[in-house]
Image (cartoon, rainbow, N blue to C red; front, side, top):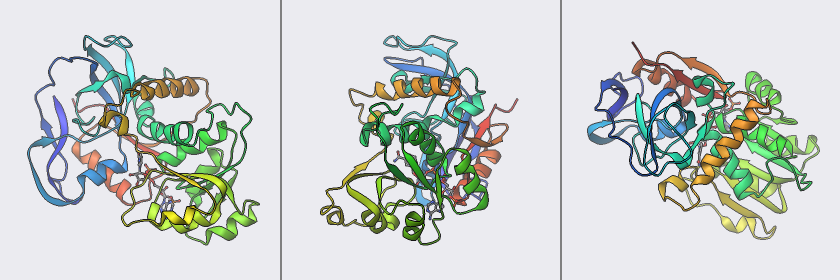
Length: 341
Ligand SMILES: NC(=O)c1ccc[n+]([C@@H]2O[C@H](COP(=O)([O-])OP(=O)(O)OC[C@H]3O[C@@H](n4cnc5c(N)ncnc54)[C@H](OP(=O)(O)O)[C@@H]3O)[C@@H](O)[C@H]2O)c1
């Protein structure tokens, strides 16, 4: 099968950083696994973080990629929810070979049915970021996806125009919150407004005066989708007493947890690979939430995230997609579709 892989961890302008290759097909699926024919993929910062230059060398080509839409080719004996021919979308498991290959084994419990009204490329834009924002808001911050329970309040979304922010803004609006989303460029500011942000905050300018001017000197929730270290003090300053903070970005230095004590603020980590990585008994929650997202997409209640699509899926296009992500200026999601003839 065709795949894009690496053996050496190199800067993305090096043509060997990601190369086209032929790999043996995966074996027939066992247990809860599906064998999926990958039709489209999306890229995420996790790909560039895993690929980041280092001395390590792989003995066999390593396949990255954690977002796909495709067609089920075969199912393991324990699979009940899917059959060959079903169209699916999923992010997968960071401890297993990734989506950048024509065929992939993935645990059915973390797979959802592909929204019928989307192409494979459009669908591939959703899984990883949707799982992340959904788990952050509805599993950790305990918000209700449909706003039931009469919840209201405000949320500051740091990094509004990126992949996670783009779905996060939409989910937070559906949950009934007033959304203050950060974006620094004209095009990212208009993108976050299009997605439903009530207020746009420029993250390269002082944030507190902008929150005050927007009538939200303090916020009930903060979702940090960009940089935990950089925004720690700000988060401690602007969170309301008894508020909740969720972050998805690893800190590179110890953070001062004590800053949250006087206000009794709770802090949550969200890592969307946790359930698959530790095979938690509730890992099926991810399949369920992807199905729920597919329903919302089909009802027109979630807007598409894809902003740029490369064809076909090959090393040259994947290197271009990684380079754009690494520039820090990507908007929404970048997808790749179809394999070379
Ligand atoms: N824990 C998890 O499970 C999980 C899951 C997904 C992602 N992540 C991590 O979350 C981060 C975001 O992922 P992503 O896919 O949304 O990234 P992304 O799409 O690459 O984000 C790009 C956006 O970052 C914004 N940005 C640049 N500088 C910023 C700043 N100083 N403050 C706030 N935003 C800034 C840019 O907005 P402007 O152009 O307007 O400046 C740009 O639109 C990454 O570190 C990723 O690894 C973690």
